[in-house]
Length: 340
Image (cartoon, rainbow, N blue to C red; front, top):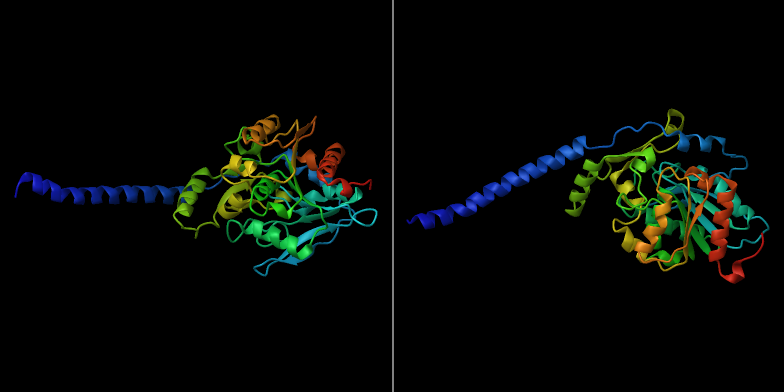
C-alpha cells in the first residue's frame, strides 16, 4: 500500500481524535465556568437600601391573587382611583430584587390622579412563587398576559416599568403582545450590558456571574436547559433587606427580566406610544445616554431627564411621581384625559 493511501486512511482518525480532544476541553471549560463562575457577594448599596425604609406604607392595600396558566396564585396590590370611575389604568412593574411594596408611592400618585393602579409581585419576587426562580424563559410574559385576562384593568391600560422592570417593559413592548397595552412608560430602564447606559454592576447594585451566564447561554442554544435554575446574579442587599427582598436571580429569571439580547431590535419593534424618564443623578445607569440608545434604535420615544433625581428617587420623590403621571396622561387618547 502506498504512503499516500495509508495517510488518507489515517486522516479521518486524526481528525476524530482532535475533535474529541477539542470537545473534551470545551466541555471541561463549560463545566468549570458553570461550577466556579457564579456571582460574588456585593457590598450593600446604601443608596438603594435606605430610601425605601422611609416610605410611607400607611393605607397599603392587602395583596390580591390571580391564577396563572400553570395554576400558581400570583400576588398583586390594587389601588382604587380617586374620584370614582377611573380614567384608565397603570400596571407598575417593580425593579430587580424588589416587590410591589416598592411601587407604593408611585401607585398612590396614579390613584390620586384618577387611575386604577396595579402593582404585581412578578413571579420570583415577593409573594409570587419561589424567590429568584421561574420555570422557563418567557414565563414572565405569560404571567403578565394572564394578569391582564384575569384582572382586566380598565382601558386604556399603560405598562410602567422601573429599572429592571423597565427593561422587562421594553421586552414586552417590542413583542407580538404589545397591543395588550395602550402605552408604555420606561423609568430608568435597564437596557443591556452592551448599551452606553450601562455602569459596571449597575453602579454596585449587582454582581454578575459572567462565566456562568456565558456557559449556560451556550448550553441553552444547544437545547440544554436543565441548569437554568442556577444563580447568576446577586444584589447588594443589607441584612435587613435580605429578609424581605430577593437576593439572587436564576439564569432563567435574569434572562427573562430584561430586554431581548438584541435590544436595538427590541426597541425598534415598539409601535405603541411610549416615553422614557430618568433622573440626571442616576447612580445605577448613565442617564444622559438614554437618548442616544433610543435614537440609535431608530425610535422617536421622548426621553425626559429630571434634574437632581437619583435612581430610587424616580419612584419616591414627588417631582418624579408627578412627571410619571404627566407622561402617562400625555399618551392617553383625548377622551380619556380629565382632571382627577
